[in-house]
Image 1 (cartoon, rainbow, N blue to C red):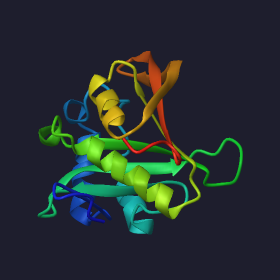
Image 2 (spheres, rainbow, N blue to C red):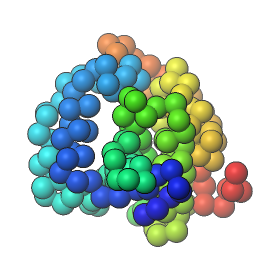
Image 3 (cartoon, rainbow, N blue to C red):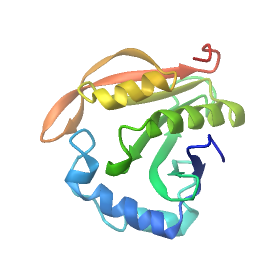
Length: 176
C-alpha cells in the first residue's frame, strides 16, 4: 500500500524478517524504550513461515522506502474491551536506527490507522508508550493520536517498571 512518496506499507519479506529479528535482539538497535530483554531469535521467522505475519491475533507490515528498502515495521492486534470484536486495535511501530528522526513512524502510524478505519469495524486505535519516550510521543501526536492518560507502572523496560502514556484515535476524530 503506497502511503506517500516517502514510504509504503507492504507484507514482510524473508530478508525483512532476518533484519527485524536481529534488531529486536540488539539492545543498542532497539533502544532504551523498547528493550525488554532477549527473545527467541526464531520466533518471528516461525510466524512468518506460518502466515506471513498477517493473522487474527496480530499482524505486521514492513515500512519501506520507495525503492523497497526496509525502514521499520508496524504491528497491530485486536484490543477488545467491550462492544463488537474488532472495535479496537492497538498498534506499535519500530524504525531502524538510521531511519529515526525523519518522521517515518508518524507517517506509517497514521497510514495504518487510516487503513484499519477504512477496512475494519474499528472505532478506536490505541498505542501505549513509555512516558519518557519523547520521540514516540511526538510521532503519535503527528499521526493524529490524542493523549488520553498516564498508566502507572504499565511496563517493565530497562530493568524497571515505567509509566505508560496511552494515546488513541477514534474513527470520528477530526483529521489533523
